Length: 202
Image (tube, rainbow, N blue to C red):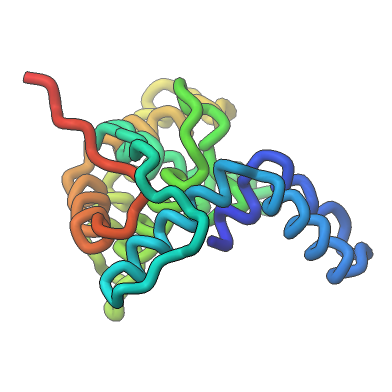
């Protein structure tokens, strides 16, 4: 919900300046979300599915609206964009952010619904962090980062951050660890998610 609140069209630019009154910013976001049919349907769909188990319904909500369909590869493309390489202003080297604020979602070839982006981010974030700091996804990222750095060094592309990002995304899109993180998260929450996996074409 936090991701949706910050990335639903009309709501995402509301966090403008640190000097803004937090209550005014909050009310502005809430107002934008109340007017967003996509946000309302996504959240209500998940709540309706969750409460249906207890025999509760949301009055006036049509839960029979056709679900969105997305391929596993599309989910992997979205998940990979949360591994965002950028230049460290202090050292001049490259650092990778895995967060909501800095990501490559805007560079996806096809625009995705914010609820799909939110799902992919939660899947990545949960799988990335582990008690010992050595999750399969963390190790996959470290291997991908090493390959990106090595390839850039051989080609002398020390200044092209955008090229490094594209290399990182291509590496992570093919990562079995990322695929597993997304599949596990989908299987765990499939009953309440407002989208379905599109069958792979043969």
